Amino acid sequence: MSETQTSERITVYSDYVCPFCYLGRESLRQYQATREESLEIDWQPFDLRSQQRDADGEIDHSVDNGKDEEYYEQAKQGVRRLQERYGVEMELDLSREIDSLSAQVASYYLKGHTDYETWLAFDEAVFEALWQDGRDIGDEDLLVELAEDAGVDGGEVRAALDDDALRAEVHDQFAQARRQGVTGVPTFAYDGHAARGAVPPEQLERLVEGA
Image 1 (cartoon, rainbow, N blue to C red):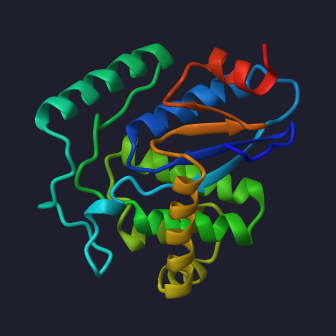
Image 2 (image 1 turned 180 degrees about the vertical axis):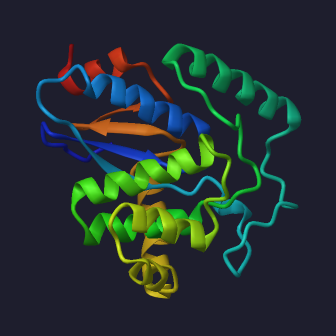
């Protein structure tokens, strides 16, 4: 990682369909709660399923992603352990069928066109819709609903989701993350250092404060 952070922002690479990203954000929230100064999130999109996408951008579930049932069972066990550790209840352990690309496009648009609090409200709502309510965050109507709840005009979000240039820009962000050395999510980056995985709050404290 070569990116340098200010003392008030931490970069977080994540994909909404990653349960460890959701749990990692809870760990970050717990760490943020211990700080006197606010620590904003500089979210960067990451597409876990990029190698399974066909020419139309849709996920082809028949493509071998190198993960067998034993892998998924171990992942579920890891999720459950972290749920207990961080005190989080979740409707789902894993989300293998839902596509997050549209959610990431909408979030990327809002990050660049609204204030931080509006983006954060939408971002958290997307995570909660999937992991707390088991809803399909690939559904455009749901994304519009969540954006409107955050105070954004729904038509603006629909236009963003139909914007091929914006979608291409998000794909460029995925590629840039990989060029910067991000190979998995969540990845937390601060001042040239990084921590990967849903690491505990005390590890995030060490990352940011060097404690």
